[in-house]
Length: 120
Image 1 (cartoon, rainbow, N blue to C red):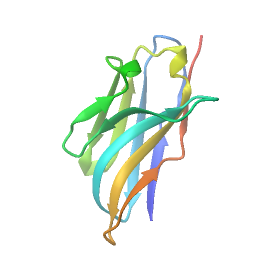
Image 2 (spheres, helix red, strand yellow; image 1 turned 90 degrees about the vertical axis):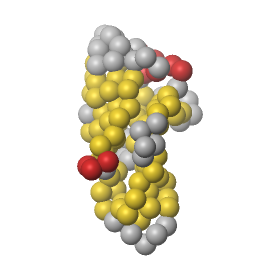
Image 3 (cartoon, rainbow, N blue to C red; image 1 turned 30 degrees about the vertical axis):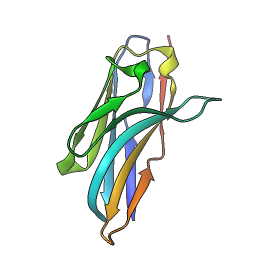
Image 4 (cartoon, helix red, strand yellow; image 1 turned 180 degrees about the vertical axis):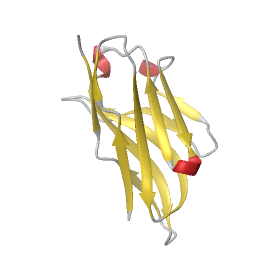
């Protein structure tokens, strides 16, 4: 059994900052890419940022220069530092990880989602 637990949700004013964390636990043998996705009301889920096990990153154009993704492989944790937040960043943010379990199978796992609201 594998779980992804997110933290860091909150309400922040435009221009503010927030840091999300996502810790993976359970029968983990290996982890490949980890990432953050978001889904705003009435919209499809979209990729925010992604990081490989080697540290290579890619992010959506809408967050480039404002959001930074990082990971701590020893802690099986991925972070999303969000700066200069805008109202359009308001969404439920989901953590995702590509994990090989102790039984050898690779699967994609998702966190439960954490609400980020940017409003004055």
